[in-house]
Amino acid sequence: MTDPKKERPESPADTEDAALLGIAEKIIKMRLQVPALFFLEIHKPLTTLAHTGSLFLQPLLSPVFGAERIESLNNVLAERKNIDNLIRLIESREFRDDEEGKRVAGDCQKGQEGALRW
Image (tube, rainbow, N blue to C red):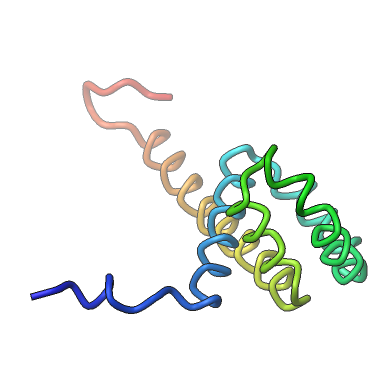
């Protein structure tokens, strides 16, 4: 028997979603949510220009950054809705991480008998 996941090729939407999720996770991991959201909101109208520029510079950028990464960037920049999705991803994960942080901080402040308080 073969694995059905290996038989079907990934759709462009799956690769776009994976790329957006990876970008959002890196931004959150580096704690750059606010500057990234500010940058994305301001430059949203320039998405078409950025896509055209990345297509034009693809032959120069591919050896430096890798063809797959540049292709992924081109797929993300191809439609403005992807930028909106990235903004939503960052905001939703930031909110979730903030809520988890508050819960953890609350647990640490309560403390337990014999445990260290933070």
